[in-house]
Length: 403
Image (tube, rainbow, N blue to C red; front, side):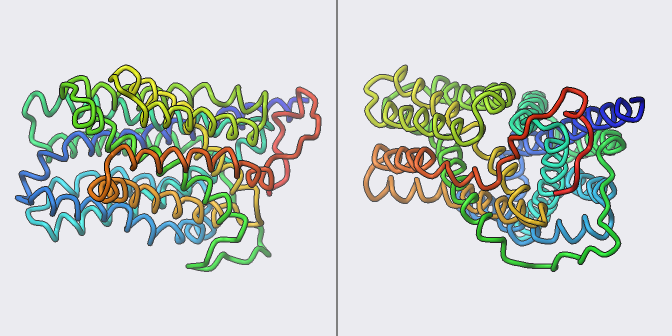
């Protein structure tokens, strides 16, 4: 009995530890995003050149993420996460040091590569903890990422308001977040491959199941990227609102997503992943329709809030399903992550191009159609769903077999 309680404590502690790592990862993103104007001025790039440079994080992530499973196999899950989260937090300093366009592109490529590899490693550990707890926790973990991003952006906003040099701000933030990440990693699960387990290939195409799951994630991330980057523009240009109200719409969208993710595990545990995503797809589609048909800012803001509510838990559930869809969770998660990062890269420019050819209303009609796709194709998450076997209360926390 004491061994069961010890295992239960170990898994619960690992849950909180990996949640802290998610928050650290999000804080790096928030710290960077708020200082982009300073970085643009320092590197002396135009708006168009900045747009080019900001494509490089997603490119770096897409290239590097397939390496994460190999690194985890060689180093073990805990050591790999220590190394990768440290590389990611320290990479925060690179963009602010760049004096030109090409050094900025290189710095952002490395920044994105380290972000993607750490992303795969921490999601794989999150899925393993979820398996051992026999209940959904991935939505809450991604909610912690959103909370970390909000904290990082708040600190960055304060630094920008005080006129702080981003090089100093990011150096201090990188040092603090590296320490926090290393401390949290002490208590994550220390998973190691079996002696006879074949190492994963350095680069490999994801399994078909991961491609199908990734397609669902693509729809959600496309809607998220479009709303984050274009909601303020939509309110300002389409509905004639003030810049302040337009910015508040984007902030409200982010808060809605963060709160929905933090509360999402209870919904998933009650109704299951497929029903949750189907309901979320309907909710997001309704929000998209309100945006498209809005004649008043309040209607559009309600629509964006419903979009955020509907898509909030989709990506966490896609990662969870991918981690259970094959013999190598990290490889499947890397495949899904690559697809979702690509969606995040494509969405802002696709919305802008379509708006230029037609209008922003038509662009968000496309977002609404993709939201409908969530409801239609949610069933692919069932393939990676957890076994629905009944477990007793003590057994619910006992580490089970590796997937």
